[in-house]
Structure formats: C-alpha cells, structure tokens
Length: 171
Image (cartoon, rainbow, N blue to C red; front, top):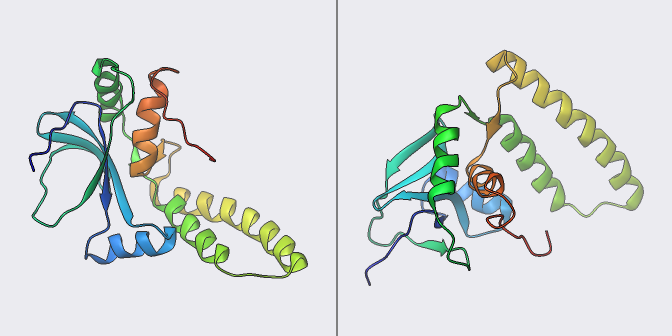
C-alpha cells in the first residue's frame, strides 16, 4: 500500500529492535518510541541526539508508523515556518529530562503505601530538579532550550495557534 504523507502530518514510529527504542517502549508501556513531523514530500523534521534536523523519510520493510493528520484542512505553511524557526535555533536534546522521566516511570510501576508514596514524591521532585540543574550545568553551561522528539512536534503545533493545537484527551 502506497503511503501518502502531507506536510504537517505527525508520524509516530513504533519501537523497533534497537536498544533505545525497546527501552523507551518499556518505560512508557507503549509500542511507540519516536515522533516527527512531515516537512516535505519525502522528509521529516525531528529531534535526535544531535539536535533538530530535517532528514529523508526512510521506512524499511516491516517498519510500522502511526500517521496523525489534523482533522481540519489547515494550511501547513505555518507549521513549516515554525519548524524552520526551531531548526535555526540552537535547541539541544533534553537528555536530563529523559533520564528523570525514566526514573519516574520506573517509580510508577511500584505500588508503595501512601506514606511511602508521599515521602518518595517529595524526594523525587527535589532530586529531579537538582539532577537536571547539575547535568545541565556540567554538560552545557547554558540555559538554552531543550526538547525531546514528541515535545518538538507538540510545540510546533502549539506555536501555530489554537486552530493547530493538538488536543490530548484525558491529558
């Protein structure tokens, strides 16, 4: 079956066999591991370990993706312009947030007593803030913006105004 992508479509990649995809899938208890936005007929804009980039859309046989298309027929130009803004900005991949998120997702799988949960929550909140600051300081010595793949896609849509915003049900 021929896939037809349109500019602005959101592509959600199912986890594949590499260790990072498997880890993301396990931590989030989901079958997905990456998000990107269609930038042109054959390319996507995505956040990767080296930052934001436009890459050729390459799917191997057996690769599975979810395609999300906005329900109304909105002009994709604002989405591409906003993506261009982020491409020009020096935004890094938010590794510290990803590490903290993994810790919180592990905690989510533990069923503690209410007292233990309260204490652990306080510790985790403070520890997460401090660890994020320390890693940020040690690695980057700056306050530049950082994103992960799904937050980049969401932010592009969000920045285009209320007609473009992605509505997350029960979120």
